[in-house]
Image 1 (cartoon, rainbow, N blue to C red):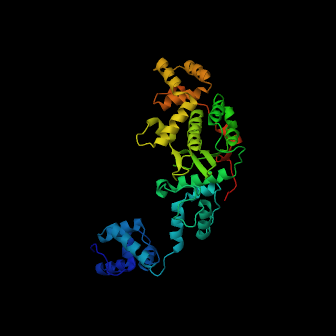
Image 2: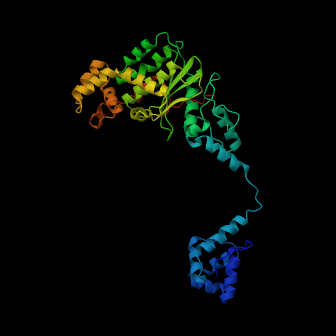
Image 3: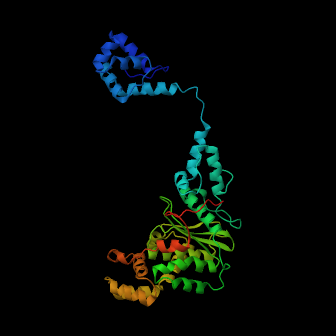
Length: 383
C-alpha cells in the first residue's frame, strides 16, 4: 500500500478491508498481528471506533505505511461527516467578543456579568465600552476631544482599563473646581505628605479640593499601565493610578506626572490619551522619541519630589557610595521619605540594590481613602 490522496472520502475501515483482501488476511489475523482485541479491529472496520495514534502506528507497521496516513484518513472522514452542518454564527461572535476585551478578567473583576449567550455578552460589553458596535473605539474621551489616538495603539486589556478608570471617576465626588486657582499651592500641599507613607491617605482629599478626581485601579495582566489622566469634560480631570509597584517612590512620581498632564490639560483638545505604560523605566531611559509633553511631565514630577539642582548636588557630593545615613539625612532635609531619594537615584540609572529596604510600601494606606478597584476591593458595575 502506497501513500495516496483519495479522490473521495471513505471511512478508514474500508481501506483496512481492502488491505486485508489484498493480503488474504482475516480480521482475526490482523488482530493477532496488532496484538489487539478482535472486537477493536471489527469496530474500526465498521466505523464504530476511531483510529488513535497508537492504532495508527500499529497499522503502519502491519501494512508498511506511515502512521500519519491513517491519522489523515481518520481526520478526513471525521471532517467529512460534518459536511452538512452549517456554520455556527455564535462561534464567530464569541471570537469577536474575546478579541475586543479580556472577558475572563473583566468577569473576575465584576466589571461585566458573564452570560453563555453571546448576544447578551456582546450587549454587556458594548455597554461597558459605551459603543454601538464591537469595532468602534471605546468611549474614553469627552466630546470636546477629537479622537486622534489610534484604536489599535493599545491592547484590548488596556482599553478595558481606561474605560473602567473613567467609570470610577464618574462617581468620585470633588469639593473644589478645576483648574485650581493656585497650582503651586496644590503641589506644596501634596509634597507635605511625602515624608510619611501613612500621609498618602490624604491624597484623594487634596486632589478633590482642586477639582481632580482620584481613583486607584489595579492593572490587568500584561498592560503595564502605571497611570493615566482622563477627562469627563473640560473641567473634570481624572487621575488614575494602578499601583503596579507598591513603592513610595513609584507612587509619588506617577502621581505628580499625571497631575502635570491634568494641569496642562494634555489630551483634552488633541484627542490623544495621556496614558503612561511602564512609566518609571521609560522615563529613566529618557527615550529620544518620547513626546515633549511627556518629558515635561517627567521633569515636573522629578522636581516636585526633589528639586533637580539639590538632587544633583547630593549625588556629586556622595557618589559612588550612598550610605543609608546620608540618604536619611538628605531626605529629612528635603522633607521627603528616604525611599523617594532612593527612587531618584534609580531614576538616574544608579545602583540602589542595597537600599531597597528604604522603599516603603504605600498601597494599604492609599486604598483606605481612595475609590479602589482591585486587590479584593470591589466596586459595583457603573454604566
